Length: 433
Image (cartoon, rainbow, N blue to C red; front, side, top):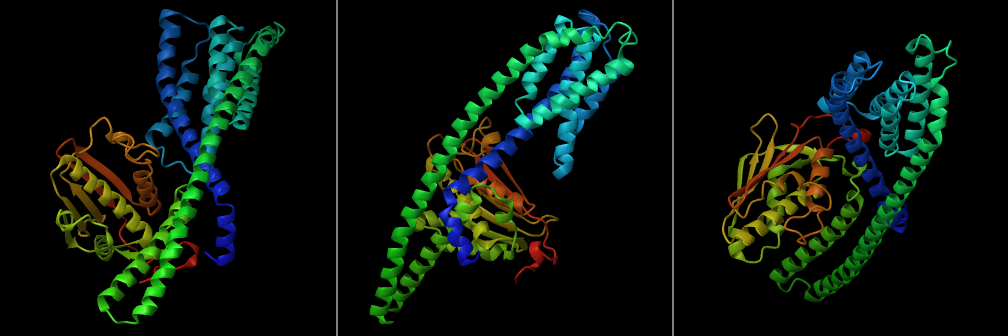
């Protein structure tokens, strides 16, 4: 990153960070809503067909329309990660439009505005407008128009002769539907304002913390240079200590920059840019880890079964290992027993790094949430961003991170990486040796 760009970035860092966090949060919520809708469609379509044909029969119930809705929802459950980019947006719009505004509007018209389908359409609109407002509005307009066209052309043979009697009923209930949409939209705006205030506060606090960290680091660095000039090589041990302090100061400044950039999980900031040797990276992290004493250092064993290299970023790889090692040592300390073992295993089809400890373990009910942002366990033991950041980094390198644990027995983190390929990297750069 060039100096002018870096300077401009630092000037706008709080606002940029807040915006990036909002974008990520909105994307995550959209995926969760689509997944939830898919479950509702796959369960609700067959279930309510059974209800409306067996226990409370409704006229014009259509098995074909419900089967089509069920099929449209299946990809979001079976292959959610296969649909990406523009195809994801197209799929989301088509499936949501069909399952909610189109299907319920058409059944409302076919049943001439019956109470059952009027209330069902109202529920569908409430669910629809929990999506983005413009998305929901476009979906509602397209779905309602398609339902009206199908109703007039193919739905009810007597529609034209009866003067389209279902449409006045729909218009009569339109004020209720509009009022419901307004209420849902206002509620969403209120939640968004609260979330924005929270994220802005986080960004401001992060900027303040980073500033407060940089100030003493600058002072330490300047004093180290002064001491080094005064020593002038008189004591080799002092020279080594000063060199290490300078190294750590540079490293902390880099970590501040990397944390500020990657806390929003920007893929372009986490993308691989260099070739990283796993064995050397692990050795460097162990060498500079601030162990409390020699006894704690002896709790950590490193086993290199077969070294390997991968495309990533060395500093970010160190961030991942430091986070996992710190958590493992805390687990051992809480349990009052155990050891930590780090295994470099490059002999597999997908090379992996294992970090295991025999400390306090993780409760089964907590395990599904450990990679979620802002989740920490035990409570109040951290900000809940360490493992989420690790996941973002490893996934940006097309790797996988998993955790297995048994409470009071063990915890194992497994990091799998694609086997290194001598391919040209993003932006035309080639991996450095």
